[in-house]
Image 1 (cartoon, one colour):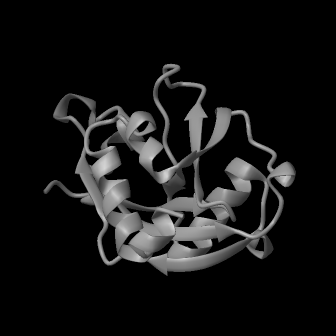
Image 2 (spheres, rainbow, N blue to C red):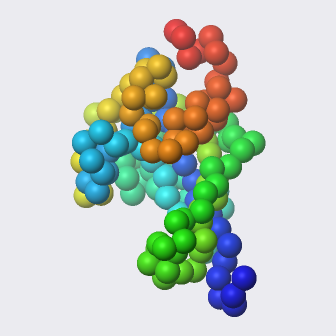
Length: 159
């Protein structure tokens, strides 16, 4: 590895569920109308995973810690490499990919308090079974399913 290159950019993902067991998905303005994701982003220097998690939630949804209960943190990470041809363009070549901590949270505040930033076109709340139709980037649904099943009982998913 050449000097000055960190292997993976750290970050967090937030799988957020409401009181009706629906999951929050967001559509960024840079996405097509069929592409969705969950809240998340890269970690700043000297920031721990939980601080990263709540900073991203605040930036993207306008909500603070008091609006959420952390159900759990996954034992697994979402890790992937950037395409080789894109590495120099993404973060000025500092990383070869990303490695994200993954959390499951319950919204305990009001959905009416959500104030998205300019990066987000739409938000939606979907049942677990509908995630497969929304999270369609390669491996995205499989990762989400694995994390959610790890941290929520199957009984909760089917209620």
